Image (cartoon, rainbow, N blue to C red; front, side):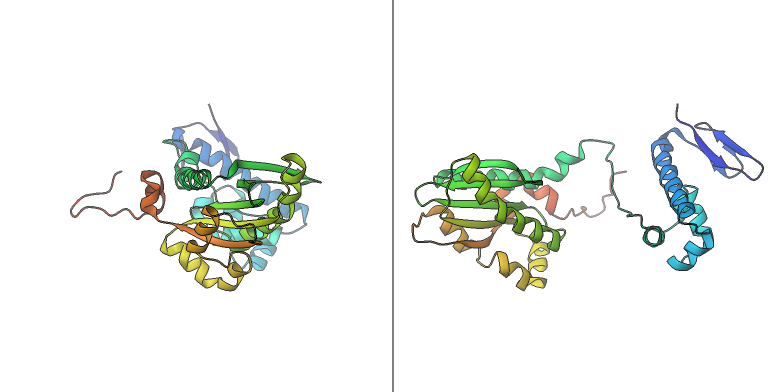
Length: 281
């Protein structure tokens, strides 16, 4: 049975699930969450003490109240805004990130539905065009590690395809930097491990065709043009037709949601409630 230490005015006590003292109450359902909250609070306190700072010092530098710093250190994060917690973390050199656990199923499968559908569609298209493909191609080149969603090889024109598959774009800078590193390393890796000596490289970004993805690209047009300047028509043509004279190229292949079936629509489409219906609890 999980227990938790709380600071009471007179002494430290342990509350078991269901027990209450004053304004404090524990429930079995909240155990896991509170344990993580308390651990985070302890980290904040230990780092603050290690740096020789008072709670008021942290509060002044973070632009929050001392009470918010105190609540955070005691694990009472539900009483402090996420913005305030991040400012406190920034002062102390603690990276605060948000994660979630879905208690009703496997969240990785839910999030990966659209990605898996894009991978499957890309593999089918490349296979019909005569490409030899590798999925989740991992590499470790002198300490630089990673994986590529799809690596493709077309022997007839010695074309190497490096494909990044995204249902949505979250971090433009990180995605572009990571992909550029893959393009630098993968030709050397496949030449050594697969015996593929590429004459040219096709840089491919496969995206679900959504307004959100197009808006991101529109806002960062110059950045995307530096790596993926070509459009869907040109990229599909280069995938389908071999060309011994074609050089390196890169572009974006937008895939309509309808082409992905149910696996792609649920993840990216809006949910509209029928008139008069209530949302599920």
